[in-house]
Image (cartoon, rainbow, N blue to C red; front, side):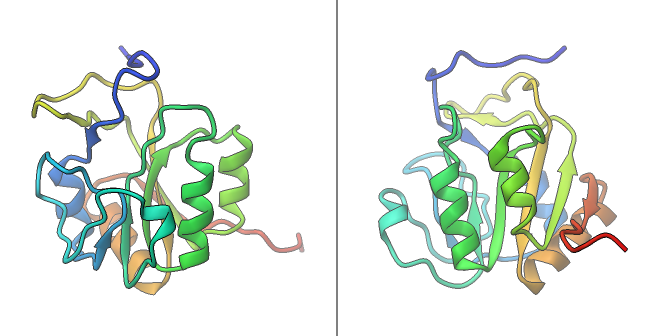
Length: 164
């Protein structure tokens, strides 16, 4: 059974370690890192606040807050402008932001419903949506390919050209 936490209840949901293990990559920067919480994101640097106003560098990991309607849009705009990394979002394929992002990404890994980790360390309930990982850049594409090989989900490369 799926479950959706009450909107605004918390933006503190952490990506489970098994996802990073399956991707097999070390990130240069986590752009939406929690000040406290699990430290299993394989990363060299972290932004804990005001990430949208800072200079991003290297291969980024982005699991930005996505509780409010369209709250992901500025984060995704910045992610695609940066052009090197992996972003985690819900797989809301009918949303305008999702369809626009499909035209800007190099690849997407569609995953089943992820039980995220709460701030207290407990495992959350199954959300109402599946999860998507977005890749931009060669290293990110290789990581999503690893993810598919390691059973995380289905890796696709969107076609945004003209039909034959």
